[in-house]
Amino acid sequence: MLRVLVTIIVLVSVSSVSATEKGKKLKKGAYDAASTNYNVLYPLGSGQERVQCLARGSCNQKILTCPKECPERKPKMNKKKKACFIDCSSKCEVTCKWRKANCNGYGSLCYDPRFVGGDGVMFYFHGNKDGNFAIVSDENLQINAHFIGTRPAGRTRDFTWVQAFSVMFDSHNLVIAAKKVASWDDSVDSLVVRWNGEEVEVPTEGEAEWRIDLDEREVIVERTDERNNVRVTVSGIVQIDIQVRPIGKEEDRVHKYQLPKDDAFAHLETQFKFFNLSDLVEGVLGKTYRPGYVSPVKTGVPMPMMGGEDKYQTPSLFSPLCNVCRFQGKTGPGVAKY
Image (cartoon, rainbow, N blue to C red; front, side):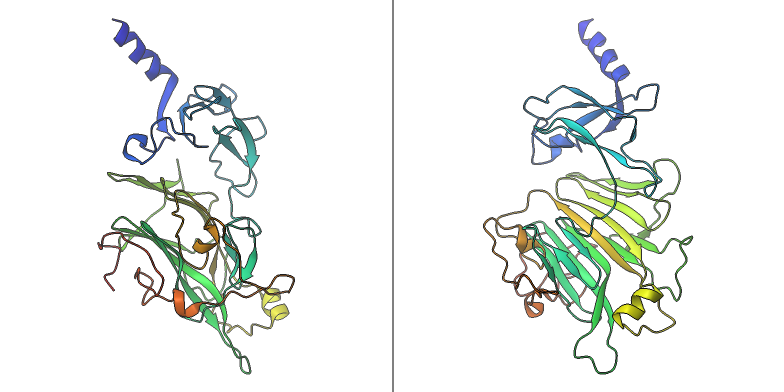
C-alpha cells in the first residue's frame, strides 16, 4: 500500500518531461552535480515553471521556480522574451537569459570566422572558400564546419563564413546548415537540419522541437524563435545555439566584400557549450578548452589570426579525418570512413 501511495504522489507532482536526459544511460550518475540535472514539475497557476533539483550538494531535492519576468524555460518568441535558466549546481538559482548565440561569449563562432575560445581569447580563422575544417575533434565528438566565401579581385585571401556544421558522435551525424538564397527574407526559414543524411522537419507549433531518443543519449533540435534560430542539444556532449543570418548591403559596403547580387551569403552564428571534453581535445576551437592552454595568437591587434589550416582541414564535411583529429566513434550512416 505504501509503495502505491508513493507512486501516485510522484505521478501527480512530476510531469513526464525530464531534464535528467536519461541519466541512467549517461556516464554521469542520476544525482551528479549538473546545472540541468532536475525533474520538471507542474507549473504554478501563473504559468511559472518549476523543477526539483537532483544534483548533488546543497541544491539536491530543492524546488526552484522561474521568476515572473521569465516564467518559461523555452519561450518561442526568443527575440522578445528571455528564458528561465535553472541552475541546480552549487549556485542553486534561476536567472533570465536570452536563448541565442552570444558572439562575444566563450565558445562562439561568428562573422568572417571570428572565434572566442574556451580560454576567453578572441581570434580569427579564415580557412578557405569551399573548405571543411575540424572545429572540435575528441574521442567521441567531431564537429566540422563548411566554409563559403568569395575573393574580390586584388585580394590575397578569401572572405569566408560558416555555412554548415556536421556534428558527429557515436555512429551518428547531425547537420545544421544555412540554405543558399539569392536575397534574404526574414519571413522565410533558411535553416536545414539533417539526421544521418535524411532531412528532418523541426515543427513550429507545440514544443517546436525535433528529438530522437537513442540508447545512450537524447538529441534535440528546438526552435528558439519562429524562424532561423535553434538550440541543438546532444545530451552529455554538446549544446549549440545557432542563428542563420545574411550579409546585409551595408555590411557588404563597409567591409568591401563585393558580394554577387544573386547570393545573400546566408551563414551561421553559433555558440557552443561542451560537456566532458578530454584533456587532449583538438580542433580550431576545441584545443582552446585544454587545461593550461596558452593561445599562440598575437593579442592587442585588430585581427589576431590563428593559423593551422593544414592541420584541421578534412576531406569532406562528414569526414572525421585530419592531421590532428582524434575522433574514435564508429563509422555509420552519418560518419564517413575517409
